[in-house]
Length: 205
Image (cartoon, rainbow, N blue to C red; front, side):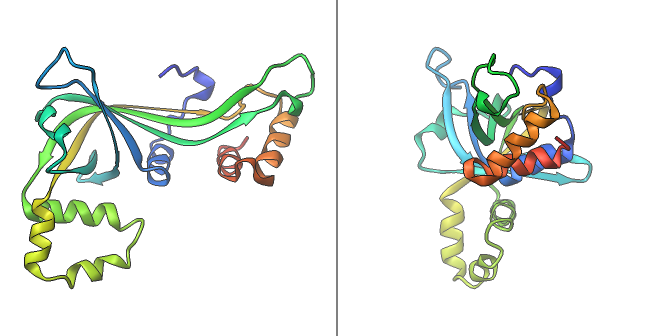
C-alpha cells in the first residue's frame, strides 16, 4: 500500500479502532494446492485480539467452503480492511487550480495462518466475533441445546492470523490548508460521510 508519510496512521489504538468499526476483511493468499492458480480472495469478518502481550486477527470459514482446501497452515497471507471513503470536490478548495481526489482509510496486515479446530477454542473465537456486534445473543447461544451447538461448531474452521506487519493509511486531506479541511468536515458532516468527518476531527484535522 502506497502511504506517503503525512497519510500514515501508525497509532496501534487507531488501527484497532479501524478494524473494530470495519471488520469485513479481504483475505488474499496464494493457492496452496496450485501455486500457478490465481490468488484466493475471500471476504470475511475478523476481530483483532490482544492477549498476553500478543496480537492476532481471527475469523472463520464454513468447513464446506471449497476455498478452505486451498489454504495451508503457516502460509503467508494478507488482510485488507477498508474504512470510510468519500469523493473530494475541488469546490471546497481555496483555488480553482485543483482537481478532484478521494479520501479514505485503509489497513493492510501481513501474517501467518493458523487453523483453530478445537471445539472450545472455536466457541471462544465465535464469542469474540459476536460480542462487539450483538452481545445480547451470547445468552441465547448458551441456551441452545448442546448437540445443536456442537453441530454448528463442527461446521466451521477457525482462522487465526499471527501478525507480522501492519500498515494503515488515513488519507484525510492532511496536505490541504486548515480552512479547506474545515469546509470538507462540514461537507462530510452534512451527509456526504459523517464517519469521515468524525475521523478527521479525531485526528485533529
